Amino acid sequence: MTFPKNFFWGGATASNQCEGSWNEDGKGESCADHFTSGSIKQPRRFTKEIEEGVNYPSHNGIDHYHRYEEDIRLFAQMGFKMYRMSINWTRIYPHGDDEKPNQAGLDHYRKVFELCKDYGIEPLVTMSHYEFPYALTKKWNGWADRRTIDCFVKYTITIMNEYKDLVKYWLTFNEINIAILGVGDTLSLGMMPKDENLDVMKKQEHTSNEMTQRLTALHHQFIASAKTIIEGKKINPDFKFGCMIAGVVSYPYTCHPQDVYAAWYREQIENFYCGDVMVRGEYHPLSKQFLDSYHAQIHQEEGDDQILKEGIVDFYSLSYYLSGCSSTDPNMKRVTGNMTTGVKNPYLKSSEWGWQIDPDGLRYYLDMVYNRYKIPLMVVENGLGAKDELINGMVHDSYRIDYLQKHIKAMKAAIEDGTEVIAYTMWGCIDLVSASTGEMSKRYGFIYVDKDDEGNGTYDRYKKDSFYWYKKVIETNGEDLD
Image (cartoon, rainbow, N blue to C red; front, side, top):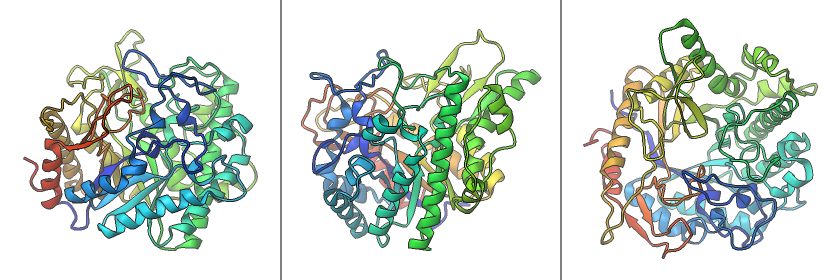
């Protein structure tokens, strides 16, 4: 069995990691604009005020805001069928709760979508991809306050009405389950951090009250997503909405029954706590036990259950980069990657940043999720962060081709298993700022951007070897992966 004839091959970016122009044309400050640069050894910081002389990578990104025409033309040369991108909330409503939208922001994204249409590229638009209005963080502590729901729905209704004839596929929240993973208080939930020097990507221990607050904030995102879908179907019945989950694959480190259960339980909570709410419209059966383990509770209002039931998604999208193991032995060596942690798997190799590479885990995850939900799946993030070397205008990234080749083969195997996969948008199709470290040297793209970790460079674009390889993959609909 080959990939479906209408399969969506493409790539993915996020506005806070590529656009730049952080305070241009009426855009307001987002939480992302307050994250400093970092490295594999030095964690990113969140500063409540912008500090002079400090590097904030989102402020310039890769200048996609001004160079989107060049970038989308390059995507078209590769043959993209889909471009996953995000709209920055603060370009539309600078403070999150403004009375009227910012026309310059609306006009910008209209030009982007019209250009995609000219090239036959289907936009897949993330409404909230770690881009939360900082004004609402200061005013209400982000999603911890239920009033944020109405602000978000006003924003999403605005963009759905504005682009109803240009965008069909929507994702409400990026990697919404990171709130369950123990990270993302500020990154995803827009909550003010207790300590500015806290590693924003490191899993934190939370008190009972803190867990009540963060899980209630997550519940508010669920309600906002459901309300957006309900309203979106009124605006255009042809709209298709998806959830977006950070895929967690956890193998038992040994065949000890406790390790097996630990791996199973982790997958149930970290994948399906959010997946069940967004796909089935109800909380996972284990959610009560999970809440009780933290002596936490969720503050809900009457009618919430009905809203969740009515506002379920049409498809399930995911990011997948790595896998890990689960063990009840606290002394086992642990590794991290994409905001998840796990015991190191001795059978797997790792990237330069310590992310364990496991193509077979993608097949496992796709089959597992599809057999639970039976709705179409999209792989909307997958890729290898690596240090690329530009020599005479060329980048020979055979290591990236090898990584993607094996993962696409695993995705193809899942399709042969009977799993319905309809899209693959490789993460960071053009080099952009790393969310985890704020670096540029951690590169993912098919297109090299001449910018270093300090923000210096020409910002010129160069095609890597993987650019031509992926072009051939798309031309053959995944048949020629050599």
